[in-house]
Length: 185
Image (cartoon, rainbow, N blue to C red):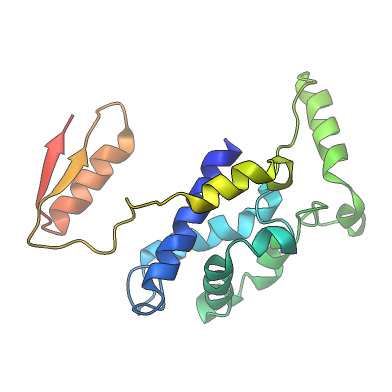
């Protein structure tokens, strides 16, 4: 749901704020796979109705600083035109390649999608459609579960469930990194 996505953004905001004195990136002063994985998701958020305009973006100053820092990297410069087209698609889907694409409102895109799918009750839910009370509650949550680092001398608890494919991947990564963990089902 949109509330879960917004909660994730507030968690990222808090994590970046806490690490801003120590790191330039998510995990260190070096660009890592984590940063590379986060960048396209940040680019796509306005297309999905999240941080789609300046007032939304004011809620996340550290996320915005981080995004702009990543955007300037040579690694991502070759994609800048496409990325910025998607990034600026909060009101109109500006990523449609034809010249007229930037003038089509999202409501028309949703209407066409509803018609083509035969499902006529779909609505585009955006950050703007969430009431301010919910936004305030999300911004005031503690998010104490955000890890600052993994202490190699301390076991971490890994909650495992065989129905979740990512659990297997995470277990392999923890083993490759020689990180001690306690597996709980």
